[in-house]
Image (cartoon, rainbow, N blue to C red; front, side, top):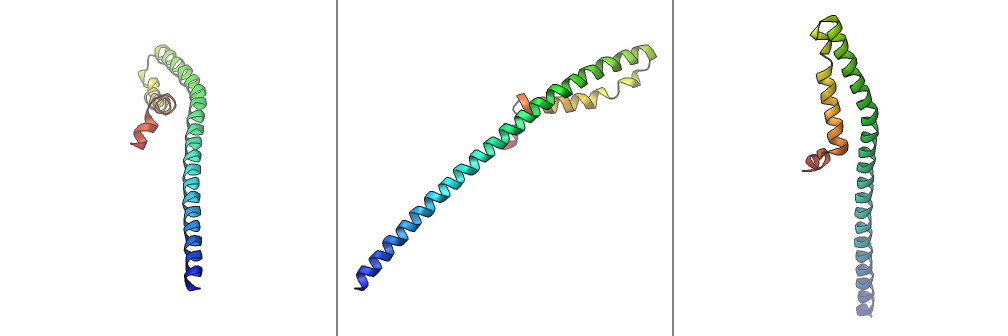
Length: 104
């Protein structure tokens, strides 16, 4: 009698372990899918931001250059380097390999 009940318990434990293993695999797959979607959303946001910031940066560079020429003062061009770093960073994030380098 004890053998039959212990065999049933072993089968039950084996079934529970299998169920838990499958559930863990599904959770890991779901987490990976959510991370991939989040990364895709981040890249899409960066590309959209880059359109507007690129336009702003281009106009600012042209206007500041014209202002520096008219005033004969090269200090007017000082905002261009920091803006170019921001533009380069977002370009690398949206169209470059920044995310792969971060993962590495």
